[in-house]
Structure formats: C-alpha cells, structure tokens
Length: 451
Image (cartoon, rainbow, N blue to C red; front, side):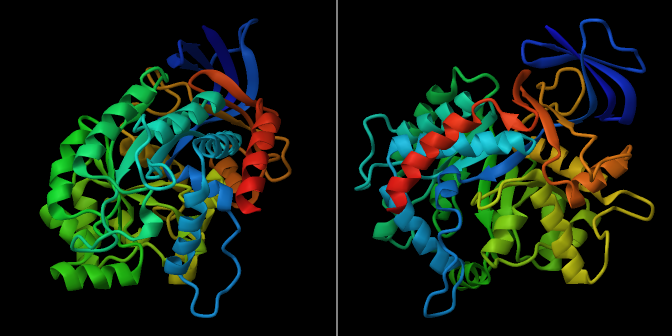
C-alpha cells in the first residue's frame, strides 16, 4: 500500500484541495479531500487522471517522418499507405517489440497511461503464420509489460484490399487472416496478455474495405465482453467506394447492418452526413478521433461540434504515432474546429466553460468506454493511473483549477512531471525510468530498417 497527497487534484466531482489517495495492489482504494498530509504520504502539487490513447498502430512509430517527400503525383493517404506497407514488410518480431516499447515509454511521459493497440501486423515476411499465431501480439504485450502502460489489445481482422471481398495485394500479406486463422490468433492473444495486470482483449475488424459482411458477422462474437473497433469513413474515396459497393456510406452501413452500441468504437468517422452524425451519437458508440494523424494524412475534419451537440462521445488516439502527446491530440482537435468554423473555444460546451476541461474529461470518459474500463479517474476502484503536472512550468505558474488544463493543453508542452500506471511510478521528473535503454534498442532496430 502507498499513500499519495496532492495539494490539488481533479476528481470526478471537480477540483479539490488537499487530496489523499490510497493505492493498494495497483488500484485506488480510497480518496479523501480536505485532509492534511500524513507523515508517510508522498507529496505532490497537482494531479490529474491518466488517460488512454484508444487507437495506436505501434509499429508505425518506427517510420514517423519517412513519408514527407512529395511524389510525382498528388500525395494522399493512399500514397502514404504504400510507404507504410514497405516498412511493415521488413519488421521482425524483435523490431516490433523494440518500437512498441519506446512508443509506450513516450506515451507514459506524455500522460497516457493506457493504450488501445489496433494490431494488424500478424505474420512472417512471406505472409505465413508464425508457429505461435500471436507472436507479434506477444511482442506488443511485452512492450506494454516493460514500459508499464495499461494495454487493451485489439487483434485486427484483415482479409481484402477493398469493398466486396476484393483479393488482397502483396503489400498486405502480413496482415491477412482467414476466419479460422483469426479465431486461433484471438485465442493466442488472450493467452499472451493473461499474465499482464489489467490487460484486456477485444477485436478490430479493420474496415469495411477489408472485411465482408459475412466475415464481420462471423468474427463479432470473438470479442466476447471486450470492445469492437473498426476504421470508418476516414477518406472521401473510401466513402465513394462504399456507396458504389453497397449504396450506403460507411457509417450508415454499419449503423444499419452491424450491432453498433456502447461496446463499439468507430475510428475516425470523419466524413459523415448530419443524419449519420446524429445516428452515431444515439448509438452510444465512441468516435475514436486521432486529430494529429488525421491532419498528417490529409483526412479531413471530424464534425465534432455537431456530434457533441447530439450527445456523442469521443476519445483520442495517437494512430500512426507520428507525434505522441495528450495535449497535441486535444489541441489539434480544437484547432481543427476553429479553422472549420472560424470561431474560438468551439468545443467548450457553452459560455464561461473551460475548453481544456471539456476536452480532457470527454477524452477521459470516452477512452475508458472504448477500451471497456468501467471505472476511471481519481476515485476508489479505479486503476491507479495518476499524472502530476509541474506547477513551476512557465505555462502553468500561478494557474489553478481549469486554467491548469487550458494552459497545459494549449501552451504547456513538457509539463508532465510524475506518472503512476497501475500504481507503479514509471515517470519521474518527466522521464521514464527506462527511457535511455528503450531508445538504444529502438535506434538499433530502426537504423537497420531505414538503411
């Protein structure tokens, strides 16, 4: 058991002073506000909950920045994807572990304490399954274990290159599964995370491009009590091809033909009509927004104001991991809306309300729902995921309450001080305890991959 004391902390009920938090076996067992610190309490100035990156492709951290040279024709998501395929084809299991470990170290240093790993790099270089069908998933789990981050592992079913069951092409060979292979992979993935405290498993039908309706129906039960994530409506071309295939837009098709509910998370959902936006909000599903990646790939801007006005829920993800940061994603989300609507503080929720507080709390609760975590935040029975901010940081100096979140998100890069993930202190003075060794292993792998 350990006892922490914070001069100020963001609780589910709001900001409170002199907060004592008792942690037992990775879980918060008691939170008391308005008490002086005990002689054995570990003392800090200001605490907020750790939140989740609900959507990550860990292996892509190794190629960050390698697709920033323009080709001879229009450079789009689809040309970026070819670079990603080439990079993925070269990675060994050891490379995946090295890249995931550093990524998760970086996530923790930025205030993420859980990751939803949408994992589709399954097989050997030639597309043949490994002897252990979850060899790559095991490497992801190992990266989470080494770093200390909480893990929701989402093995992805990928069978086709486009709508209507089109045959996959060679660049996708490491992703492709039959239903039987995917069933074995999912079972082996559960075995891979069984010893990892707090880990859980869902499934991720990759997209309507990659999964037929029959396949989607066949694999959905494999999620069991876990979440179901799927890419949807990321690109205009994807929407157009979905209409040509089915007469429906991607989100519209899913809402009409799949059991979309609170267990589901639609990643991106960028291109929706007003009707789709309202219907997705009513479904209770989470919109998994990845604003930095969506900007990097030129995807478009999610209709966030309209979705939230309709009662929708969202979480944030780091997706391609080209840049890793809680504040980066939340700031980009709000700034995209400012550019779209030519207004400020678009997502605050109303006059006099803090935009930083609104963004942070929505992402906290939406991320927890999307990763099937029933209790989150600084409260009893929640996993002890706690982040302290450096109140001496120039952007936070003299701030209190919601102003801390506003200044951290919009002006406070580098302000994370200490991070506990599952009750273990993994970051202190802004540095993960394994930063240097993780960087060395990552650098050795990536030097070979980019040579």
